[in-house]
Image (cartoon, rainbow, N blue to C red; front, side, top):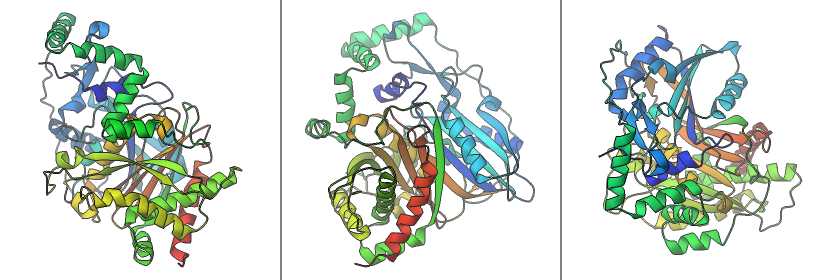
Length: 468
């Protein structure tokens, strides 16, 4: 049987256009070891491990006449050097120059005729640092058979990559005739498949309602959400093709300090810091805020399967990511009250018994946050942009250093995609004592994304100094 894309994976390909590329990114910054961390060594490291992820050497092949969803086939012309690219900043390159490069890279769609991922080895950073910028299409990372490439190459101890000898042999690509015969055979067995394929391509209202239903959980929840659209505002505008990227560096200890003083969870404090920043950002733009003004966030979170008590593999975590809609109280002027409102909104999730504690996620091998952010983007991509204003993903990472080969990773920033008519997406990852925010904004609608990033730091300081 052909390796056919799921309906959700195919939808990510169908809705993609020049203004909304459907890939998730990451920016990892490394200290260059004494013996160097070269492009050639990175090629060896990635090449060695691609055997564990066959999807990264496969491309999407359309079925003639759209008789069935596309299939995954081996790329007979796979070229690792095409996917792992070398770039450099004018020395000494600043962080600002790096993030400008990230914004340009993230605005470009992946080549649909090749495996849907890219990695950029960026040299020239000041302080003898190098960066690895990754892009992976949302149709690739499902958390079951395929994880994000950033999770694949990181280890808990330094490793010496061995020279890569590629012995992989691609399977022959199916002919047009075979693709049609397979599609007809499946249609005979499941006649509704053809109707669903046509509907997915047309993107009609019924198809969108079905996607919302799958993500939110049941028909009643989906209908309730759809009749309650997100508040209007500057975060919901026609998305352009350009991007702006900014980061925030904070300490995990600061969030724990606020949690100890005012209750809730670290995730609540993260959302409260973002809420305070969004409040100031909206005020700076002249928005008229009242006590009841909110910004609706889509917050994907890892959840526990009802029949699973422990997590030991990325597949078990990756297969259970639920999306929650949280109304952020940007109209509330008191920082502590904002935190309490958010804590109350998240309480139903925590009380369900299905939430996964941070320590549970840390048992997953590799850098699981990279995969969990990708799964969060999948959840957002399957929902109508009319029901939320901003995507916020927050995934805890290990509190010990990780390495790519001999190079120690010192920082990691997620780059979440924008969906149609969305101007801002925020990814948050904790790692080795730090909490790192990546803000991806539409270049026209949120050109001042760096200002918003600075307001997150100010909002966290406000929470630290707040008294009940």
